[in-house]
Length: 278
Image (cartoon, rainbow, N blue to C red; front, side):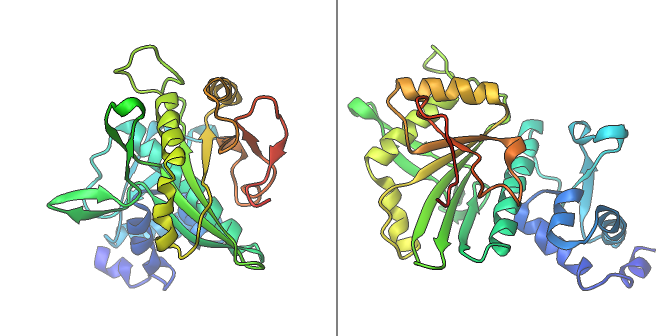
């Protein structure tokens, strides 16, 4: 039965398995954005791809839309051993990735050189090391730690060949902004690692990767709510971080808006919104 249905697949349909493999996890609407002209078309064609045994799928309750109708999450191979929050994080990360990719396709001036998500890795000494991972020395000689952005992004201005380096942080609203317990994770702890990272100019690693001399990096923090943005900006400002961390709400991110003036700097004395491409 499955083999018979597979004969009906189109050239576009046959791109789905590799696409899902590249993004690790994709929802129906995300595959629609990448391949199909409408959601209804995507649903019909993805059922054929699934029936042919080329992809696997499952549903998560939190992805239920208005009216109670949910979306499937597609993957290839074995079902990823990810906790619920990690699945949602990957889906949100891919939403942002697709927004950047599509925005660059539609923009005559900006080229997407690279978008490296945290789930991309390579095997070293029998272990998988994330491509975006770097070691950072902590202040006062207290040791080192790994900095793992949710993604590394490189953009190029086609008119003057200038490049920009960006690190992405995705907030689902599940982690504390700050904590008094040194053992507990918080967003501020990671932001302070970024502060040391920038101070030590560790981003220059990417000079050779992208054949360009970067003079800085911008951290793009996509937050769950405006309330969390206010809280994080206040904490960042109090630690002397004003310019290199920019923030926006997840609801503001789309293909048509990602390059618009939707980004706030950490500096709480400046409430203007800016575009990351100037």
